[in-house]
Image (cartoon, rainbow, N blue to C red; front, side, top):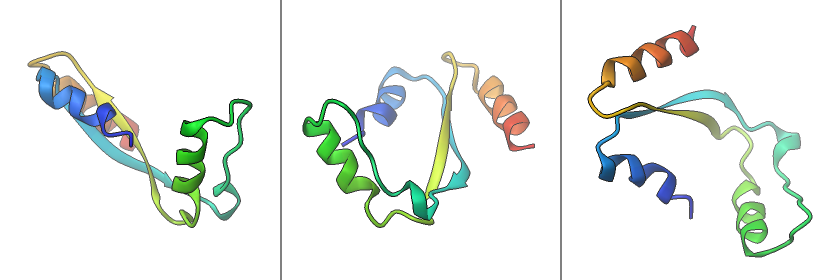
Length: 78
């Protein structure tokens, strides 16, 4: 359902990288908000039984600045 967050960068030619930063903990497998709309239900379904799944960070830069994206990812990795 969150496909548009990744394909946007492929279509526009902006360099983007994804890196894992942590994992979902047992106590983080629920989601509540005040809207209780269709997105809330989608997210609730997605977080069920998600313990141990990676939580990632996406770094995106300007077109033709791939090296900057990689440099930021390298700093974040440390």
